[in-house]
Length: 50
Image 1 (cartoon, rainbow, N blue to C red):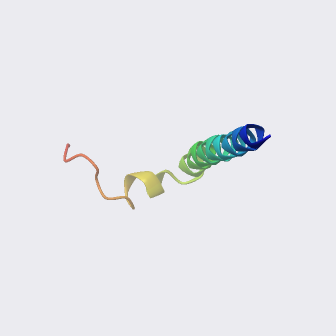
Image 2: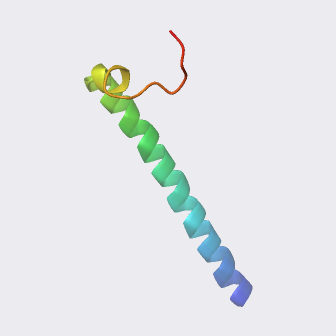
């Protein structure tokens, strides 16, 4: 019974992690579509390229 509980907990953590990642990706897509300036002007450059 203990192994089943541990497996259930692992599945819940994995599901929540994947759901949070999907939410973040979708949120960024909507935000980039609505306000492009947030990703082009307001963010510092990650790579020093022109």
